[in-house]
Figure: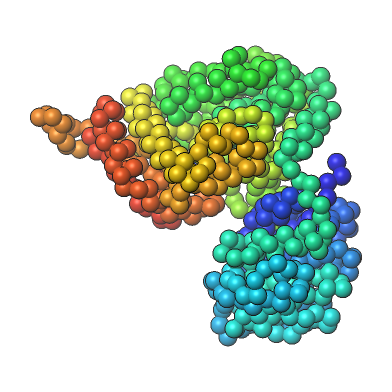
Length: 544
Ligand code: XMP
């Protein structure tokens, strides 16, 4: 596939993935590589443009992350951001020094709009700054094309050499015209056509999968989450009944979730694949009986998954391929792509490959960001409720029930959670209807318009993740004339970008009140509902 691409060279900045995502939003394919990557390898990839990210170092420090001068002499347009901008200046003969004060936050900036980078944007606007060092002397051939009160070189360029350096962060939303600036770089300066689209990705993947798999057999552990569902749909379209999906229902899923997955991928669904649902609820409950310690519960659930899957895999026998729903952030975060390796603390399907008799792993989604996986899902005809599903932990409700797990407690948390999700979804849909993008209108839109309307146009309080949990606390209440002694349900709802830090979401009080009253009235065994206001840190999103 001869896909035009831009390469992001990662110097360890916190926004590296965001830069790549923003480039892809300009319909230009983009990959992230560590600054340690050989220049020859970069040349081989023949990128249409290169972007250098921010990073934690100072360019003048000994041992600071660096790059060779040659990178700027290949005739390929280069855009340096923050540390990347300072590095470009430093390597090409300018000077970078430490300022007396750090420039941090939203900053008014003046732009020379005759620069190709700033074409079409106003002469002054707000940008996001975060730097101590600044470019105190321009490299030869460069001129300043933006400044702030404290920073004489907020951006510099050498137009003839196609080199651009910007001190602020166009990739974060706080920069008012960040999108336009990145668009100007990739589409105008790098002259990318903008051919990266989900429909063509799906088409090429289907072709590639067919070529690779031939008449081989493929096995997939389907969890019902977004990634594995989209992967199943993609493989189903490509190779149909050569695919076997094994779906382990551990009895710790959300209410009706097992049936929903079966409806989509089972016999009555639109996909012609072998679908095996293993109802392993009793096994899990037996193993978990009386176990209260969170890590122990996680371990039991993980190990039991392997055991159940192994048994199923044995029944199926040898397969040619094992499909995995790895996505691009997994690749980058495991250190294979960029520089800033985040240690992944959660693994759903640890060690699975060891237990299956297969020849090769296939990972057709490994180049996609999560949003792109969702778009691919819509493209493949999966229902919105599956495609826009919020994250759900591998150990499921097992870690949303504090203390020991029983069938009764699972029922309580499932019922309370279903009411909570239903009411929040209703309130959000009502909001969307009033803002002119209701479900009916959405169904007539193209995939990318639908994605925007359904996913990116939510009320500001809409949580990124929300669920009910069982506190394991019982307290006294009164219902009718009777004293009760029942459980307290906790409602959690967070706003977050990366799930590493989070704030409690401010769901409207009337919605919460309705949820509370429905839970108390409809869920037997609950007489109290609490709203968890804790941020992360110090709290985690899940309770265990
Ligand atoms: P915490 O609770 O660590 O959660 O703040 C951060 C995000 O990770 C999800 N999570 C898990 N996902 N297996 C998973 O696949 C797990 O064991 C697990 N524990 C937490 C959690 O739902 C949230 O999105």
